[in-house]
Image (cartoon, rainbow, N blue to C red; front, side, top):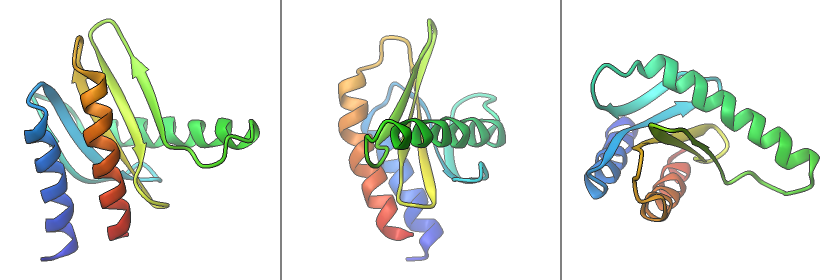
Length: 121
């Protein structure tokens, strides 16, 4: 199986495991979309750029506070949430959930998916 197909498979598996998700996107640390499964009119380029920026800021904070390697960043709003996970040294996994989504389940499934994706890089 080609690397892109394996990445897409991980994303689709995560999306199917948590039906309330609004989207899943894998981006490079530079903010370029690699693979995604998004609902509606979501712009993958914009989400990739924001996820990479959030992860970059999180890494800088973790580094300056001697927290070791960044695991994830969570952004919660009135209408939903975005969780950004480190996926190896070169990518980030962004998971979009609706308001009231089960954050525990999202973290459980997404952390493992990000780890699995990280091994492909």
